[in-house]
Amino acid sequence: MDKDTLAAWALSNGWRMVAGHPSLTKPSSPKEAIVRMVFKATVVNVEVKKPAGKWERVAGAPYGAVEVNPEVGLPRGLGLETIPSISMLMQENKDRTVFERMMGTPKP
Image 1 (cartoon, helix red, strand yellow):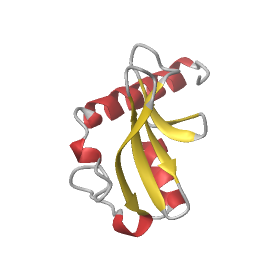
Image 2 (spheres, rainbow, N blue to C red):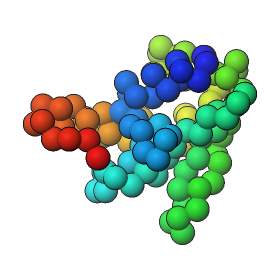
Image 3 (cartoon, rainbow, N blue to C red):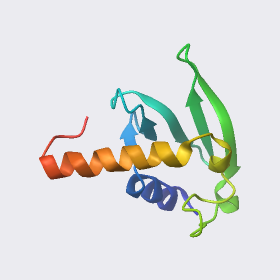
Image 4 (cartoon, rainbow, N blue to C red):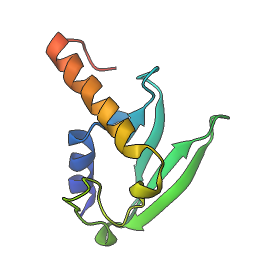
């Protein structure tokens, strides 16, 4: 996957752009990102926000090592499957986005 394909996948699976990065937000605070993808020139990093507010890189891979995994729904090679509850968080964010569109609520 390349940067654009990975960003498109993220945005279609519940991630939203927060501060220029595809991010997952807290269910209780939809404007605050807690997981984000940071695109570099040759690699993509997944970072998680610690309680103290500092971002910590938990996974990363070159774009060429990230590939589509249709069985699980998460890209293979990026390490997303190692983040606890990532699928649930993605689903909550996706549901919120769909609900906002139905209700006509502007995105944060």
